[in-house]
Image 1: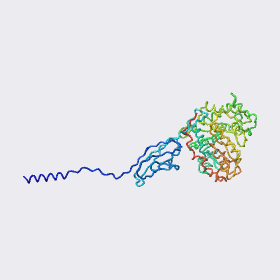
Image 2 (image 1 turned 60 degrees about the vertical axis):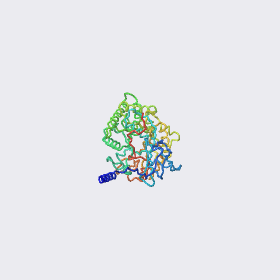
Image 3 (image 1 turned 90 degrees about the vertical axis):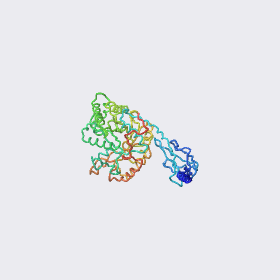
Image 4 (image 1 turned 90 degrees about the horizontal axis):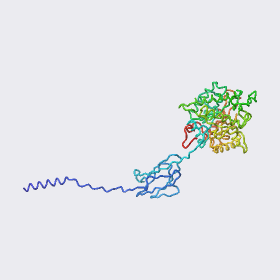
Length: 488
């Protein structure tokens, strides 16, 4: 009996010894504490000073993850308060930065504060266009002509893609590109030969091709019209007319219903409309063009100039032309540019000359000037200053639609007589007149821009490197409406 009791007692002891003891909570060894009064901070879009309130029981450092937030140099941060500055947000969208507070002794221990800065409210820019039904791409070009002047001025060259001093009709060639490696931002071309009695000329196929090449690279198309006289069929220039008195009556007869000159002029415009309405890019969209009807109207040498039409007749001719193309023919891919001749210093009457025979604000999109100032910087600077001021007053983009010095040889021509006078003026474009194709005829010096072998090559490349000179590769998307713009 005693033996049985002893065995039972021994057995109970064994069972008791196999029961697990109750778990003991470990004593924490990491006693670090890091917290913030706010872990999300919102600031205005302007340059803003702000602070972060910190509660920490250890030494930490602050890693700023974005460069638009910096430590405030004017206030001394402490362990409890860190001072920062958010730089101004120039963008039209909000942005977020991260402030990372890290244990100096343990780079893996960190907590973050997010800083969100409001978007910069973009002031809406409203511009008024001649053609209220202009295509979206044409309205976008109009807006970008205004906007691009903030960045710089576009370099242009007449017929640059068609021929140069020593080459003709070579696809992809360009005197400009041959010198600096880039195409002009503006391609200038003449529409006269596709409109008047030369409309069957084979060169018009080249004209279409080079325009489309420029458009596919995103460049701007600028077009003048040296139209043969619709009354005589001879020339745009009176000096080539045998009967100048008859030639001078062209405008009067165009404005008179039922005349032969009016019928011929409308045929000119019909051909232009047909060309414009069939000028489409690779996406099937109509190509926008800045059209310069009746340029250099301040002079007497053309059948639309001062020796052939009075003030009211010129205005009527301009408005008649725009109405017919826009309203009758339904051409909605034109912007209309006026371009008086502005070669000299007009000593107080510069604005008046720019507004000479002004057709009305509702009839002009772009204020140009043909400025063959050569090396007369005083004249160029005076005219540029007046052009810039008028552009701001009228809320219309502006530029030099023709420029240059025939046969120039100055090695510093570009820096001295173009970049210098332009400075930081708000001018959208400067277009040089053509380099005539002369082949081997070195005696023909009809050129206005650089070409391989010209003594100004190095200076031209210096101009190309200037951040305010804009060539093809520098252009934004000129055919998409920029943010914040409204065209009415």
